[in-house]
Amino acid sequence: MLKNIPPILSPELLKVLCEMGHSDRIVLADANFPSESVGKDAIVLRYDGLRIPELLDAILTLYPLDTYVVHPVQLMAVVPGDPVQTPIWNTYEQIVAKHDSRGAAAFGSLERFAFYENARKAYCVIATGETAQYANIMLQKGVVK
Image (cartoon, rainbow, N blue to C red; front, side, top):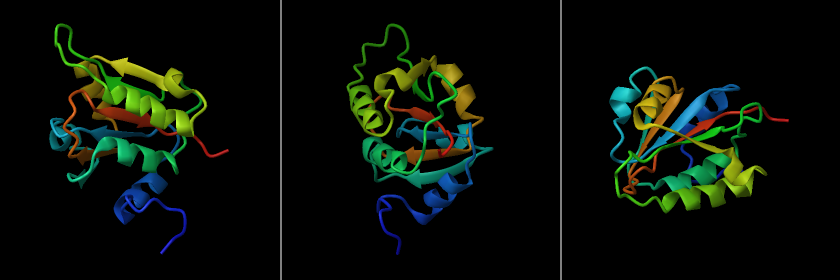
């Protein structure tokens, strides 16, 4: 047992977070994301029973966001014309603000296919059971100071 490690983080995920270096990316993917095909060259972990906000909060207790880029947090932009609302993004902003002084300023967005392309270069893709649409979020790792 270890102290102060969020219990939601599995040993496999802790290993991945430890292995990742500066500028490596991790994708927290919603239930609709093609995690296995996009992550075919990455480590894919299954967290089907969990939602992204809880996992994001736990990860950010250990994972520094990159301070050398403007937007170390990337969201998948809503496809133009899609009437979907994205209240989960507000939740993400609140969580990031707890862990990074940039808060909402740390966020950027990528068009859907650009997000997929960037996700293909990720170190790890975490497939979750998140059912909110456009809930995919990509984090770029920084350095521990």
